[in-house]
Image (tube, rainbow, N blue to C red; front, side):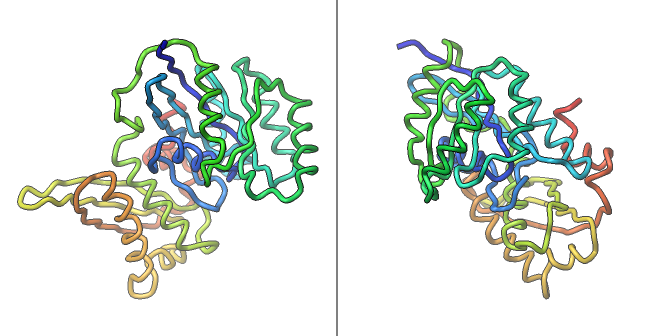
Length: 300
């Protein structure tokens, strides 16, 4: 059996389930998941290896109408991810109607000659199949699609046959990453993303996407099997800082407790999280801040 490998970009509108899909395929969390749109901010690679070969999935930010500098960068990350990949998975939400945003995404995809597989996610939530098929026709009329699959990333439904199709569309190639490696992101990045996920989840609608997380240091204790992690959560307003901290520190404790459970699985050891909250006004529109927070690296 020949060994196949390649890079596969997963693109689509915000909140269609791209990160959930990649986490499901990889078998562990490498991309954060939130019911809020635009959760993923960088193109994150998830590495799937098996006897047939290796697939490097590129999880991209949801393509949307941007309202600030950060939003524009997120769109650039997503579009740039289409360059130098071997296959594109265009993921859509089966419960949503075809929209103007979908039209804009298709225009970006149409400029690219890379083969496209349409992935219709959240199929377990569909109640009106006739409406769904009518929607799918809109995509097929506008885009040259190589294949289409109906999946549920949350329930892992039809993921296996989609993986079969991905391998059938890849060429023979090398093993890009050693076996056992599931992401090309450093620990600091993944830890920061996990903490951001918990903050978004726990604050519900109170905190918009004006939150950034930076891991400032990871220190291993020599005396015991413990890792000390220093973290700063940045927000844009004092009122948001109060929400993140909570009454007598209740919210920041909950964020830390939830994050710690996921981080322990990554580190394989006990951890101590030291989390601080700082205000950085309007950071999403300041390029120097975006660069310091790691959002300009991929566009340079």
